[in-house]
Amino acid sequence: MTAIPADLIEKLRTAHRVAVLTGAGISAESGVPTFRDAQTGLWANYRPEDLATPQAFQANPKLVWEWYAWRRERVAAAQPNPGHHALVTLEQRIPGLTLITQNVDGLHRRAGSRRVLELHGNLFGNKCFRCGKPAETWEDTGEMPPKSNCCRSWLRPDVVWFGEMLPETALRQADASARECEVFLSIGTSTVVYPAAELPFTALRSGAIVVEINPQPTPFSPQANFVLPGPAGVVLPALLAALD
Ligand code: NAD
Ligand code: ZN
Image (cartoon, rainbow, N blue to C red):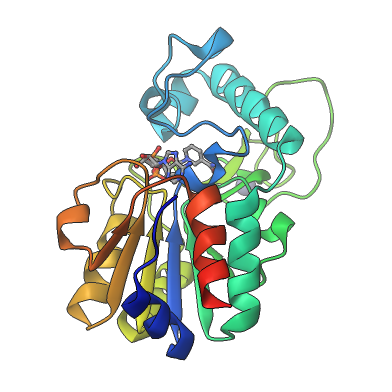
């Protein structure tokens, strides 16, 4: 069991502004695999970096669509875990909390978190590959992927692929909360995928206390004010318990 340092608890008790960044690691205990974990079954021979790009989709839209269908199914069957739930409680305690996530699984909202900035989009949304217009409906002709109503182009999942820009508003808000927060928690992220990986460094430069929660060290660990090694589903409930 990870001991929670008393000075961190004191800081969190009095903080008005807290920013939290989560990555795939927080959903690992819900059974949603991280990108660094080997893919399983049908997809064992594909690297996510070779599927989650506009080039991959253009070259083989059906393959990429099917990979997303598989991921959607897994996420739909998954449930938020104690790590997600602890962040809901933390938001209730600290109204000035901003939750920034790189995850596309929607588990933070399903757990009950209200202020969530989804930097990489959402697995369950679709948009037009040609013009980017979000699509609520389409004609079901049995084609895979289906065609958009707007351009008769393919539909694609409304997520940010490797090499694509992040949603501007969400990124701007995330950056502002990293600058303004007193405490920044970096949870379950390898801190290698930019620009999200920049956020803990931004918080540090702006004077925040930065805490990393991860069972493995990351490139950010040497700079963190506190490292709480361990799974988010164990460390976050322990942090909450220590606050009470
Ligand atoms: P990553 O796969 O690069 O890294 C995951 C990190 O989580 C690692 O540092 C690992 O040590 C840590 N980790 C593993 N188990 C953990 C646990 N139980 N508790 C806490 N930490 C744990 O993920 P990333 O940094 O988020 O970046 C990769 C990209 O992959 C992101 O852009 C994201 O959009 C995408 N992705 C999302 C999901 C999802 O939505 N659940 C899943 C896979 C990948
Ligand atoms: Zn279109």
